[in-house]
Each structure stands twice: as C-alpha cells, then as structure tokens.
Length: 101
Figure 1: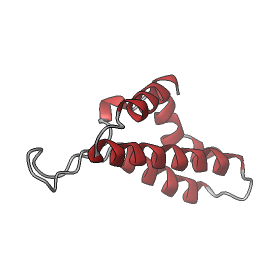
Figure 2 (figure 1 turned 30 degrees about the vertical axis):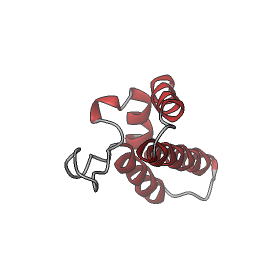
Figure 3 (figure 1 turned 90 degrees about the horizontal axis):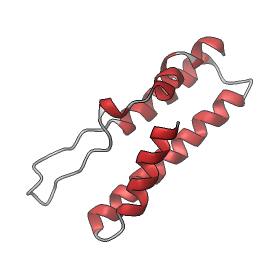
C-alpha cells in the first residue's frame, strides 16, 4: 500500500500545470475512487467473489493502462503505471481476496 500511495500521490501533486497533466491527475483520482470502492466491497457481506474479481480486474486494467499513440502527436494518451509498479499488496488484493468472500 505504501508504494501505491507514493506513486499516486506524487503523481497527483506533480502533474497540475498543463492540460495533459490535469487529465492524468483526473485519471489518478479515478483510480483512487475505484480503489476505495474495492475496499468497501471487501467489507460488504453481500459482495460475491466473482463480482469482486471483476471489479478488481477493472481496477488493475486502469492502473496498468498503456500509453496509446505516438508521444509527439496531439492524440497521444499517456498510460498510467507499469506492471513493475504492482506491489505485493496489490497482487494480494487482485488474486486472493475473492477466494475468501
């Protein structure tokens, strides 16, 4: 969790100067909102493992979204984080939690 927080928070505060940075800050905020939803789903006794697995996969896909296009083109969309940024904590949330629901 510490590495995840470091990555997201440092990116959020660092990227506030231009349109691309604002867009990325919004994406980072959306990741936090989705992660918060996962946290609440874990606590909800009505959440099924299958539904949690679906939501966790959606979050992970957003977290590791690749860049699209060429960086020098106007339609370039910067990706979020790399697979290497997945911490053991994220791995456990994504692969183990649904099995205990």
